[in-house]
Length: 518
Image (cartoon, rainbow, N blue to C red; front, side, top):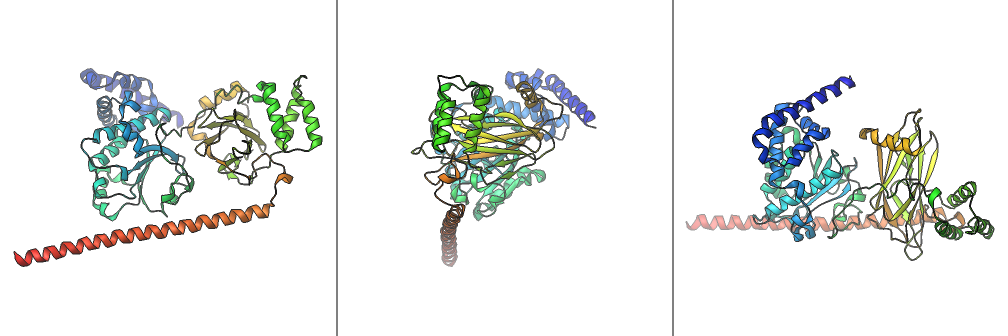
């Protein structure tokens, strides 16, 4: 069955290419960008995305390709860059990519309060939408995106149906199969009529993509870690430009070099630094033993070096929170904790536990590969076994709350090798839907260091019970803040409602006197 589906898909792709070349390119070659025509002949996934969106009907797919390609040339999509967009539009922070929903889809933020209807700027705003979507499509080919329409603090002057229609067309025609859903947050009642029109543009099938939410409901789709405070979230992110918001995960630099195989390639200077950091948390007797091992005048045998690494690993306290995935249990579940800059950046642990009956290959990626050493970053874990991954800031660089880590994992066949060459080939061939992904964000703490820091049990001046009490107190403070914010929001809504009723009453009075004297 799978083989037949693959053959049918290949036939449809081939037919689409052949007919588009014969029926459209011949007559309209000047209307298309040659780079798009060339890509269509080479990129199977791109052709398939149009076919799937048109239910594998080739005639409809060809019409869609024609419209999409003409638009791409009209907007010069392949050449769009930062210099193509007015700087003030990039600085205002009305449109950007940042964060993920609960399904792992990228969030595309549209802060409507920053949009004022203006025919002089509408083209530039459309180009900004195209710029971000094309930027995302080139990096995450075919992976869906979730649009976050943030309508908080918006009024009638922000309603621009032409702009909304363009955004919808981007996903209906220009970037097919990319839309996961459109989350509409805090829509004022005055805009209900406008969105009835929007629904008619989408059609019956696409209406299911719309998710109307309030502060309580939005967390059904996006967890609090990626929601701003006004949505009830805890994300500290604040938009600024430059640089561009870049939350895309990258393979760590030199994955087969210093980061991935640092045990083999670390210099003696690095070993000395690691030794000094470890000495801060071990006894005098252990210090004497370790100093002998890291004496730069002596050569360090491989067995002794591994023993040194093992002893260093014992100084970590295992993180307590656990994310339970289908292939791996990952600890910590959400955040990697690092020490403050005053106390010096400390290493932290990611613990992976294989819960399957097969070998699981894993890979660690980060949004800031120049900042961190990750070892190992590309390896495998045997059935039922655990692997400790050490993450440490590189060269004294500062940990940022905006930095993210991505754990990717996939099951391997029993006969597969687990060497560097085999793993490289495995990641090239493994289907995307077979890959488990989990994201971790970074957090810097001051003196009360969580359990993932490089401290021995005795180094903590507080008991686990005390830590729990502090955690509960912090939760109570956060909860009281949320309640206060809800009260303020209700007051704002009451004022808006009172203003609307006042305006309605005024209109009725004027109408009455007009009819009385006319």
